[in-house]
Image (cartoon, rainbow, N blue to C red):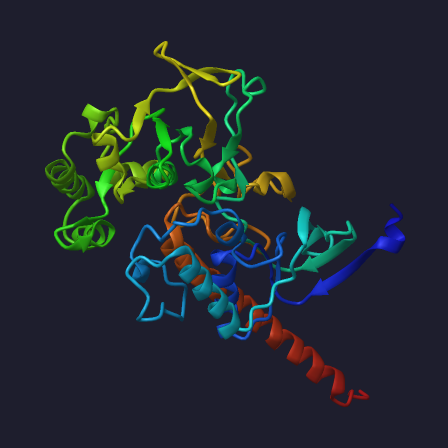
Length: 411
């Protein structure tokens, strides 16, 4: 490739945001409110590509809509408490339209590094034709998020298995698995919901539970479990709220360990706070497990053609495997800096609420492990911080311009 003919350099006076998911849109809107121009680079061909292209059809927000609003715009009143996937996408598209957010699509940032010689960030972005554009800017906002790349576990014999193996990012509906035996690996919210979807389409799912898990009712005492927890935390210590949640869950759901779902030693809120691991909010899967429509299985030892061998020695045949094994950050692959982000997991090294700001005009949004609420909080902080720098720069440039047009003294 002849770089002289196929590359260009563009100076961006405001921040460059990498990623046009909800977090990127949130910080762009906050900057717009402060009249700070910005550019968003998005590797896909649409906003919120994870939601639009890589989620299953029956997905709904797991938390009530008031906890998922982006800054300066609520959900329509007619939307249900837990909006559907399509309703959330509609909300995001209207959000982008309202704030005039127009990302540059099909732009994949493969390298970003701070140039100390000029005090700016240099980003190398490639379009679909592999034409490279170098963007130069003072502020870089990383908004690629916690779910940039699918995690595919290394399972012995995975190459030998002859039936389909698919990550949930490629799963749409249980319709194509009707009448089939399907093994779902992973018991988070996605794994549980995919199992329920498979049941509803007359498939026969089994669920691999590799670790302990907190399963809570989605609602308690007529309130959303999340909303009730947030309210209780205003008045009570976290361990007391955890105790309350576990007692009510036991009364409503029973002892989940009887069905192979052992609870962690730490309470659900403590575990979320320390590790980011989210409790499962049950939407009907547990009743299917109790009724025997979903079988719970331990970790996989190895795969053979159409057979799965589990660590307890059991062997079963399956027609497909769905990997509900989550996602990871991709920041270490393209951002070349060693202070703000961990090279191990691609998250800011400093925990919430202090992980949003690094050195040399580097920022992060959407890495709080606290959902859209955390992303919105960081978006506001970032916009406030950049506004201060922007105003100082504007004042400096105005002063320089004034000096340039004033008549020079002859003395």
